[in-house]
Image (cartoon, rainbow, N blue to C red; front, side, top):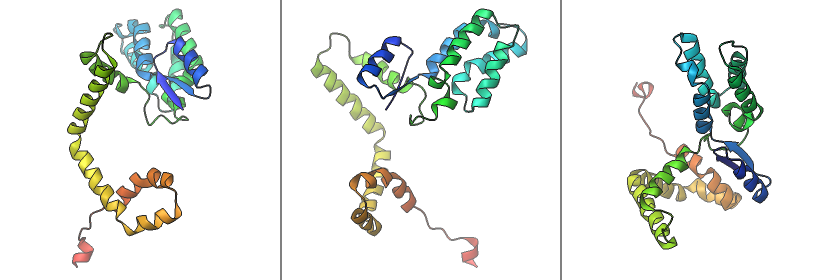
Length: 209
């Protein structure tokens, strides 16, 4: 189990008490924003090197490779133009890099997500309809309304997938799979099998000859 959120200490404590085996990670977007604030003075300098270093620093959370992250971190620590305060700030963040740098977060299953912007986007929508005085019944109704809106927006995609799934269920190979594998395994591989079994037959130039 993996939890991804903004860096508030109380969240760490609460989650580890309830889910002691869960892994807690930090939202890369929030970390990047904090880095922007801390190193903003570099972006205001006239020389291109400082501006370039600033961009590399704010993109540290999204570093795909450890080597790239380490190279930038060392460049900051060895740069005389960077204030000691900023160096210390990054040094402290460096100690917890496994929780916010994408290169290190890869060892955990996060569904390719390194930020909590998706859920915050949901929250911003909910706030338009709800407030602290809203009842539970209104909360439930709001969830259903917004859910129906999303389903309507993606009805074409849902229809395409349902059509493929109906074909999949009636496929002869599927019947053989059901004799061998459990329903859990079938559901796990269903998406890949649907894509593998749906293809177009075209006449190639060799066949035309």
